[in-house]
Length: 341
Ligand code: NAD
Ligand code: TYD
Image: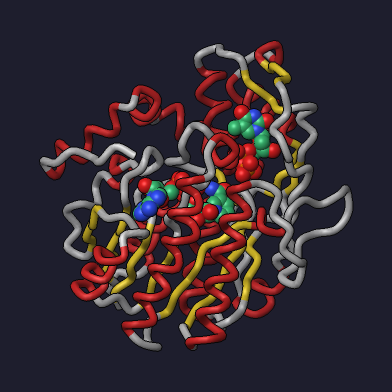
């Protein structure tokens, strides 16, 4: 079995590379990543020498390149995670979101189709495509898509393209929609690693608006386990929600981090709210539990402190990302410069 992961140098992708090499010792993993600002090969230190792992530096929106990559590696399955993933960046400039999330997804679908029906295509999407919830209810797979940010709109567009490729051309495609992840290797522009890094240095913690927006947090390894279950047992044409049944207002998450680090709440700064800020996300994951037998195995009460301790123990990783030094890793490792994006 040869699995091609896109975006394997990012947060979830890198965790997934480690997870698959460990959990499926007979599989080969090919990681296709463009190494944007979010791609960090330091996340994969230690796997480069594994004979079952191959890294390909390539842009998924480059059709000719993808054709050559698919012809050379002939994957049995694609786990598609490459994306522009940060809402705030999409508000500043949506251009790369359309290129990678929409065009890139279509390029991959076309190439999967050329290889034939035997190629399984797992499209890793997000609960954000459903829009925002009020105080009650949860997102179900049947909830109509109503994205509110350029990021979530581009992900929703990609979901529709995947759906169309399955219905029109019979591509063996499945869509997953997961809630917010936390864990090792997350880029410190996202809430949890940003707050840990700032609190550690006694810098202010920027909480958007009143901080009462709610997110449903899932430990990244539980997401990896769900993706493996979908790859192995998911039904073509289906959507599977993935979530931790673990809702927290942002301000409470920030307080837990401060408390664990023994830092004062006076570091919290309420700043201007994000435009179009979704008030609440919550996932109903009963379908994947019922049909594929997956459920989360990490509890926030333990996994959040462990995650904080991981960032404390990996001071060099954080410093490298914050200073931009991580961009030089590729050059040292492969003797070529990372293309600026
Ligand atoms: P990330 O931003 O940490 O990583 C994205 C990776 O994709 C990077 O390694 C980057 O270099 C690569 N990439 C970007 N553009 C590319 C291109 N054109 N060609 C090839 N590679 C490219 O993202 P993440 O948080 O790991 O998210 C991974 C996927 O999971 C995304 O599709 C995202 O929408 C989805 N998702 C994320 C979360 C979350 O909480 N982080 C939750 C649900 C779903
Ligand atoms: P984020 O990690 O960007 O994920 P998403 O927007 O995709 O859910 O943000 C999580 C929540 O934290 C979201 O409600 C926005 C909020 N937030 C802040 O309050 N301050 C910050 O500095 C960041 C990055 C996010």
